[in-house]
Image 1 (cartoon, one colour):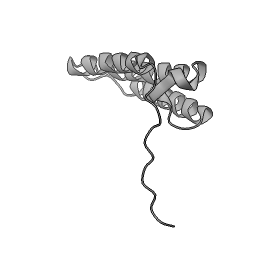
Image 2: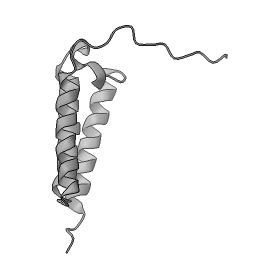
Image 3: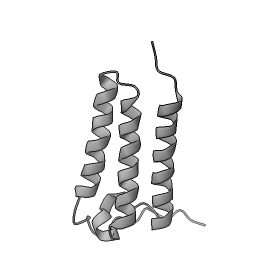
Length: 97
């Protein structure tokens, strides 16, 4: 089977606001990490993944834009699984001294 080159996107998504919202929440988590709030940082990252999953579940494909990776069910499952995993790890790890 010969290698096929990647097919470029046919159109740029019309809106980028869902991705920007997720990135803003993720950026908040990074800011918390920089200021050494180790419990809040992963909670914010988990919240960003949850919001991404909800956007992917609720918004149509054209509006979800760059949050669309695969089928809707797969995307939602991965985003929500990541959200739960990150939050659980944040809550299970004992606080530092």
